[in-house]
Image (tube, rainbow, N blue to C red; front, side, top):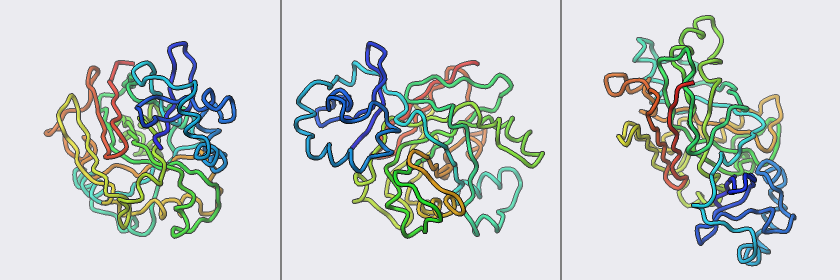
Length: 307
């Protein structure tokens, strides 16, 4: 299923999905209140809700609560995640970004998958405008895939992690590179370099939709980034060095993961200006439009504005 959060013309925001007729289904309205009106509540009890949908889908999609996609505004599919952990799981990106700064690869990167927490209250959706922080001159995009935790757990082993994944969406981990570089000299961060926005969308694809293209470490899904229509980045989810199972094992070590938490992959190889170099493309400026596309997961588009 392609699950969405959307705003109707009357300003009401609801959770639902895109049906086979390309209509936005308000799950709460279409089920006469049996299904919740927000995505987080749906994910928290998704096993029971998905069973209800399978048993009643024909009735739900032929009744009230369906709207043409052109008549609604898509928001981030999960606008209020419980947390966002972003990993550093593509080897090519790490190597190239370090080489560009005159740094060698660190051996510790091959020992454990590492992550940081970003601001889970600064989530943006498709077509949302992204304000460039006032002190930032080096604004960057990051082409990533993220999974949403659907089943909680603690000390989860990588080989058992699949059952804890609900689904996937595109993630743009916007980065103020100059703020990030300045702050991380102190030994903490990236903090303000990432604090202002993270984009999700356009929809949340349930895990079962991707089973047929599973690869050793990820999925055979092409990843592309364009700025003002020009393709800059190209990679594939299957190029992950650390699988989502390994990321979840690390994230859940000594702590409990809960439904509605998000785990980002980190940037795919070539997936940001920092890695490509400003000789390939300048830093992002107000007026620029960034499109991230992942096969099967749609296109996530945002425009940059001044803060």
